[in-house]
Image (cartoon, rainbow, N blue to C red; front, top):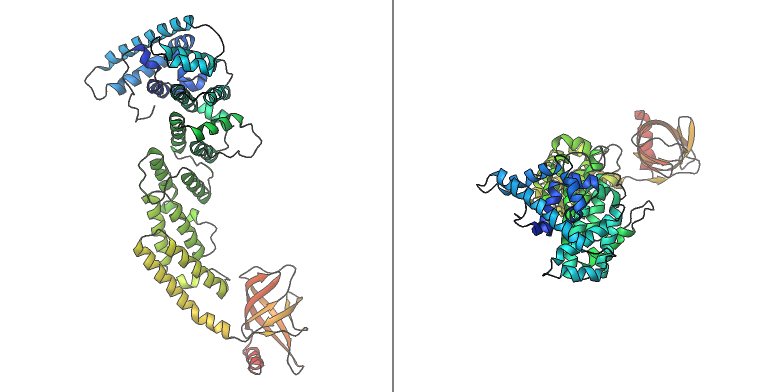
Length: 499
């Protein structure tokens, strides 16, 4: 039982143990026992054989009564021992009364109409007699799936509010059992799968997972969740979600960013809003999970695989926007500040081998994400100014590149790389495009090449050069180059001056 358990209603009469609030206390106090015996609290209370089996089960009942008694006298001056005695007397009296009612009820099939008649009969203990019929009906099922199926069928056929309240409470009891969740959701592969399926049920926005499992009974439940309030059922589902979020075991992956994305996806499905104070239990648990996933110590792992500072900025911005809670969002915002304040930002922003066009696209993308982000106004303004400075620094080089004359090559112009000859497509005083090559070098590679071009007068010009690969396009290699000798560089300049 968790620390927030408040003991529930303080029952004084045996029949009060049959009410849904009291049954919720029984679920909380005997969760492990009900889970292992595959029983609902309704069956435990309303079938004498199950009640007596619990009494004979060693310390199970004693421990549960002790927990409830302590919680119920916490704010009073009453002795715990006194409440313990009262609760044992209540349990004994309830069992005796239930067994007497059981004997008076004839066997037979349970029908929605019969339940409606009994549960609305306030003069002859009708509610408890109706719950005894329901408990018999449920105990005949072989598993949790059968119990849920029987409840769904009754509620589908009957809209009486009293019947609906009781069936809703029983379905909530079913989903309070860990073994029921595993069975009904067909053993979800991990915490992420479990959480997304539970969230889909809460929202009644179900879509069958892949795998060909039989989801018939879940479809029946979803139909009810769409058309009825089903308050107790939804509360039980939310409690299972909260239990799945407790602890520190990854819900999806040991990879830091994959785990963050799984948490963010679950937060979205649960409607836990980023940037807002979350006062409910699920929201607070999600904030705690996020704070553990996004810490200064995990930032390197979260941005692993990003090939440039720009990529790290975009990844960190995405983390900030999808994070829940001030702690995770604050960590991401601080990390962005560190990236923008790098002294070598201009040199490392776009990474090795990025073309001027690619650099400008990255600058524009980062600027757009910054402006549209939920960062503080001051941070948005500061970061946008730094991005503008990057754009200005890149502008002279881009202007020079655009001004450079680029000429189409002669059909016989070529480049020799590692002894292999490749057609030269076009070139300028600082760049060239050649290929295609069957096995092109990697982007960023530094090459030693031989260039051979035909002058307009028919004269062939040959020179050696060092080339850095900028891009690969369909096997064709775009590179910037520097002539190996001053004489060759002068020859190339004169070539283009005559054009």
